[in-house]
Image (cartoon, rainbow, N blue to C red; front, side, top):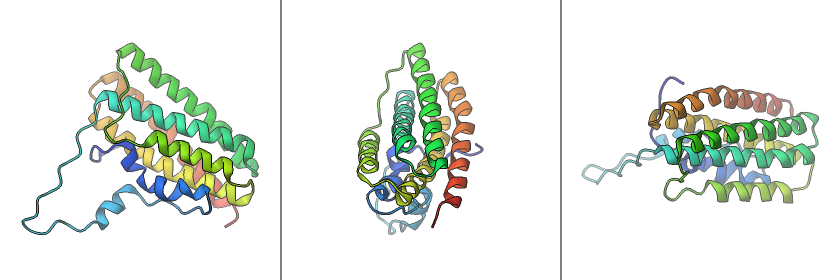
Length: 205
């Protein structure tokens, strides 16, 4: 991780995931665009127009809450994939997500307890609600090739967004141990992303 993006909550970074890939579990499996692309497409304010206020920097309590929510969500959706996936690769990936994100979540919770940090999501964060909605869509959608594609497309988009969030969190974190936790977690998230992309390339289009 060599550069840090603006301090943006996970909900904003996952906006494309929530609107596109997360809802794809219902019918389609559209890939989410990178968060920055939506910003690039936004026209600059007209001359003389007031500039939008920058998003407030994430606090350590915000970061702990966002990481916990991301790990809980991926572990939960992985549990569905482990039993409902049709492809052996998808089922195996779901089991990996259950195991790895449970471990990452526990590490974050243990550190928060050690540092006496009470998790506090950023104002307006909708990560938990979106994760619950996506899990419900996975449960409702019939098993089969379309389900596998929907789940894996979601995993690609989600891990891309979480990596961006981790970059932001690393730049915003004040506690050295929290920074170290993020640095240690990032390679695991990248490995998940690479694995998801590999599976995605093998699924029927």
